[in-house]
Length: 328
Ligand SMILES: Cc1cc2nc3c(=O)[nH]c(=O)nc-3n(C[C@H](O)[C@H](O)[C@H](O)COP(=O)(O)O)c2cc1C
Image (cartoon, rainbow, N blue to C red; front, side, top):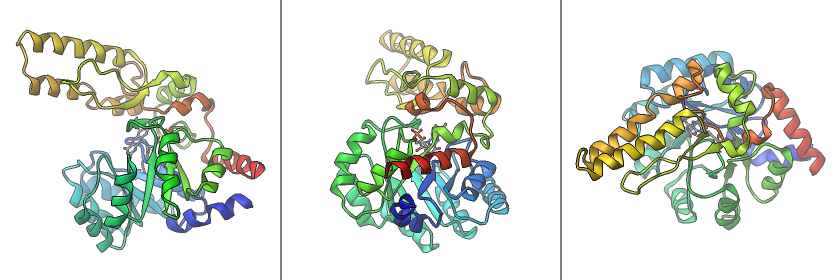
């Protein structure tokens, strides 16, 4: 197959049959889904979210019991247990760590390498991408703002032109708004080594996400997957792409309420910001595990526009590969 030849470089980096990454999704990318991804020939990534070392260890061991293939672990740089988590991954012989939620420094990259693991991470701009490779990362993921979850300001199309096309030969994966094989094949031809998909796997048969969560995504159109409005720069709002629901409307009201209180001197800047941060605490878990689609966070990318049925991982990958092959 022509597409497999184009995927060769990425597959070698990942140690998987196909150079497709199953993007980490907090509360969703657990042992069952990740092992099913890796068994299907793509590269599953466990989401460690706010886990501590003990929980992560259990999840890694459980994944390893279900697959002998490679998988990665996604670690959020802000996690206060960052160093513990890296050590657990090293002890458990995880092959790749995907660092998210910031720009890693050299000490972290070196620490991961000291266990023989590869470092993958994200970059929002060309200068940062170049710096990260100088610091020693093994590969990069460019994730555009179409993606589900926490996003940067630039779309996949801009990142491709600004970074991928200016970094010939570097191992770069592309994420955000990708589903069809024709696009995957085109990106590989442009020099990418593979692609990362998230939202479509949140809704797949093997995903343990609550039925309400999956149905809400399958029913949604791309225009429902929005990042929240920020009413005032003094009270910054994290750009998290999710489906509009009662919660997103109440969040605007909450900002309005805090702004009024701040103007009247009833709340200071720090406490106002803190109460906004707390608004969404635990909300992804409520949506994914409890099925609260009204006030939980329905994180998903604009690609929900194209995700209309619950398919197995194999069906998703077979379709993608067939589309890519036909196109090539
Ligand atoms: C529900 C959900 C949770 C996510 N959680 C994380 C996370 O914990 N860490 C991370 O690096 N990316 C996270 N992402 C981003 C995905 O890993 C992936 O990069 C993204 O979904 C790809 O874009 P797509 O949604 O257009 O396919 C999440 C995405 C979704 C939809």
